[in-house]
Amino acid sequence: MKNLKIGFLALLSLVLVVSSCKKDDDNTPDDNSNGVKSADVSLSRKTDYGNDWIYYSLKEGKEVDVTDHMQSLSWDIAFNRYNVRTNGGESGSGQGSAYDAGKVDFSSLLEAAEGGYIVDDTILIVEEFLGQNVSWMISTGNDIFKGCIVREMGSQGPSFVPNDHIFVIKTAEGKYAKLWINGYYNSDGNSGYISFKYHYQSGEGRKLE
Image (tube, rainbow, N blue to C red; front, side, top):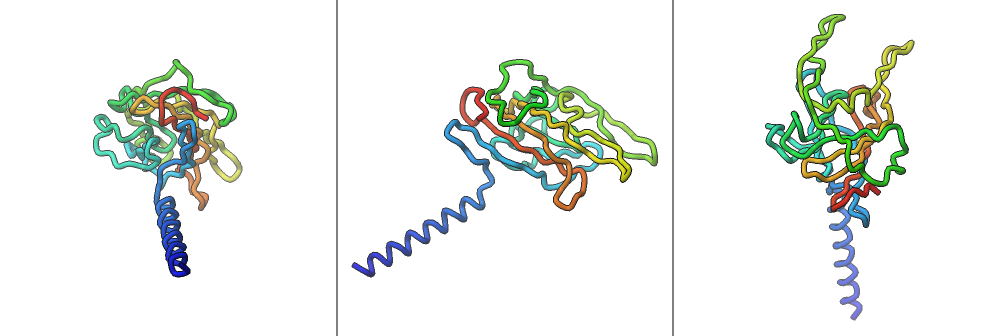
């Protein structure tokens, strides 16, 4: 009986270890009882100027490799410096669009708006810097995010500050998420690294908490 108890405890310990490892390796967002997934994200790299975009799946909670953004439904939002795309309109074949809820407390936005969403269109982005001049190029993105990162000049040079607006995203599959772009620096203080917090409604409806 004693040996049986020891064997059971050893098996239980193994199950707990495996479960813990599985949770540590799982990049999917946390899920609450209302079907709302939540995550805090720091993008893995800064993008180059020009058409260099990082694509992200709000559903999967991870960056995704995309070879043809116009055909792929694996991504929901994409970033190029402080430019943003959603998977719809001129940027993709999904149902993506965005709504600016303004400068409100993130937790106070309980439900996605029913209407008023803006789809992606053509935008101008920086192609390269030529000395003191800037070369611009036509790309696609969502103009509602214009000003989501504000460039401020100080005595030590420019700094980049989020405008703290909360955006509601309609994803490629037509689900809803609220998103707060809350940083533009990595842990070493280098600029160009977007960070954001989001809640994604994995079920039906527009509840975001």
